[in-house]
Amino acid sequence: MGVDDEGLSDFYYGYYKYPLYLDEERVFYGALGSRKMSFMSLMRLIPKSFGSLGTRLKKKGIEGNFKGEGLLQGGVIVFNSNGDPVYSYKEITGEELPMDDILKAVEGIRIEEKNGEL
Image 1 (cartoon, helix red, strand yellow):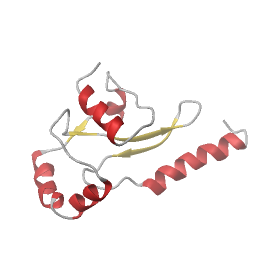
Image 2: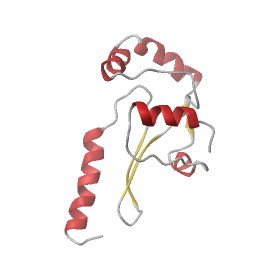
Image 3: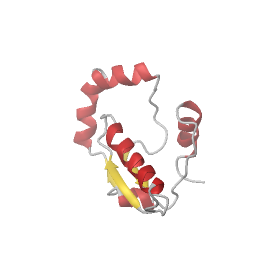
């Protein structure tokens, strides 16, 4: 398939047992800015990995590895049932996802569908 099949498989079986879609042409990656961590960003992560980030990952049972495209920065795009993007978030490495914002976007889609607006 793609460049990071082993990492994608590890992620699916270890952490996220919901449908995953491999964006082989990196269209979504491009929409999120085609960003990679800089050397300085990576250096700023080192102290965090021994502090709050490391504690948070350990608590969630998430282990790091050196497989795949670890320097790529992704994000989240939420689409409505028409395929239109209604929310996006660009990853900030080491930070929690803004789950409240993501859930609000999903709830907004549900309300629009319920009201027949989509």
